[in-house]
Structures are given as structure tokens and as C-alpha cells.
Length: 319
Image (cartoon, rainbow, N blue to C red; front, side):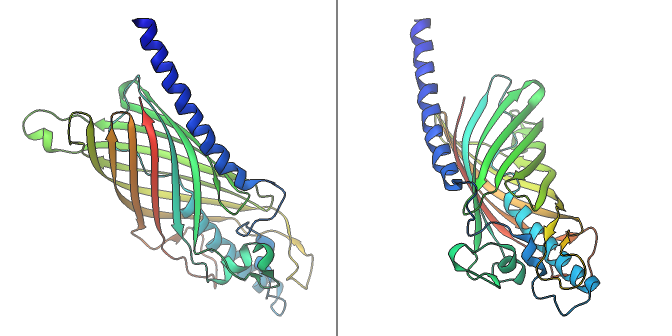
């Protein structure tokens, strides 16, 4: 009997691994060949275009402003998804999932037209038809530890680009599982820390650290089903640094230059739902900025940073 049980469980895990292997192949095949330029590849050297009549200092200010705005919206699009409720997985539990995020961007802005390759439609002015949203997918593995701690790792890809995402997260459930009398009406509460970084570009580096508070409350729908409303409140940092680029738009001095580093942050609220039936987990969240995006270091005459909305949804299995 024990051997039969182990065999069934092992068979389920093999099927699960096969399903997610297929999803990973479908996701990352969009990046091949890695050397080919994609429509939404970030091309920061073009951010100097149109500055030939300005002084070197003025041209640098314009380019730095475009770079900061571009990095701010890219960071908002690639931050780790917000699809986990406040309660922990338990010391023996784990979760394996496939998650997708769709983020609005100011695609008609000058910095997105100049800052993306454009593929076959590229002109001297950059990308003639930038996408109206950035979409990425990632696989994520979360493991429960003692004392209400969950840790997670993720890897993903931004579609129509050569950018890959690598993320890590930790969640600590402070209060969960109220059962008796009046406390049972209180939500579960957890704090979370996370970070995402990217690879795939030689022109810049971008890291998105952050943390936040999670409130959720599981509602039992039946013998094997629960529905969990949740709200994430999070602050997201933006750490963007430029590498040396060849700026054809500069006519005075050296054309090999770099942008000033960009430091900023966003504050977001993300309400959502998690539905679980036995081991299957379906989740969805809608995120919005609740404050105007902020540059820690202001840049003269820089384009204004705009708020973004983002939708995340995922499917996974929890054991």
C-alpha cells in the first residue's frame, strides 16, 4: 500500500514536471535566436537622437531624462508578480506555478519609440509601432519553511525581446489561521520582500527590489475548494545603471558615453483573488500605482513619470 501510494504521487509529479517543461519551452523559445533583435528590445543608445543642436550638457540631460522614464516603466512591468496570499505553505508544502504579467506602458511617448528596436518597422526615429503593453511570463517555485516562512525563486522572459528575468522572494506569515470567536474574522497578515534583475542587454542593468504587506482571508466553498480575496500593498525600488553606449545623436565630443544612473520608486496596491481546488491553484491580481512615480534624483527637463496598471494571472499546483 505504501509503495502504491508513493508510485501514484511520483507519477503525478512526473506529469506535473512534463506540463511545466512544455510551458517553459514555449515561453523561452520566443527568445531564440538570442542574437536577433526583437521589436521591443531596449536600445538606449537611440535616446540621444534629436539632440544634435543642443550643447553637450543639454543633450545629456535630455537623454538622462528619457533613460530614467524608460527604466521606471520597464521596472514596473517586470517586478515580481503578486499572486501569493498571506498564509504560508507550511513547513512541508511547496508550490510550482506558471505566471504571466501584462503591464501598460506609455508606448506613444518619445522615450519608448527611441528606446525600443522596432524590428522590421524600425526607422531613424526608432520603433514606429511600439507595443501598448509589455508582457512577460515566468515559472516560479515556492517552498514552505518552519515559522511561517516561504521562499521562492523565479525565472522568466519578456516577450518580443531578449530580456530574461530572475527573481527571488521571501514571505513571513505574521498572523494566520484565526479560528476562534471574534479573531476568526480577522485577515491573515504577512510581510514580503522580493527582487528581480534582468539579463540579455549589454547597454544597461536593472534591478527591482521591494517589499510589502499582504492581507488575505480564505473562504471555504466546499469540501475541496477555497476562494481567497487578498490585497498587496508594496513599495518597489528602481536601480538602473547604464553601460557605455555609442550615441550617434551627439555631434560634439566623444560619441562613446553613458547615462547617469536612475534611482526611483513606486508605491502600488494590488487587489486579487486566489481559487484553489484540491492541488490546483488559479490566481489573478490587478495592480495600480497609488502615488505618482518618483525619481529619487531629479533630472532637469526630464519627461514626467506616468502611473501604470498591470494585470497578473497564474496557474500552479500546491502540495
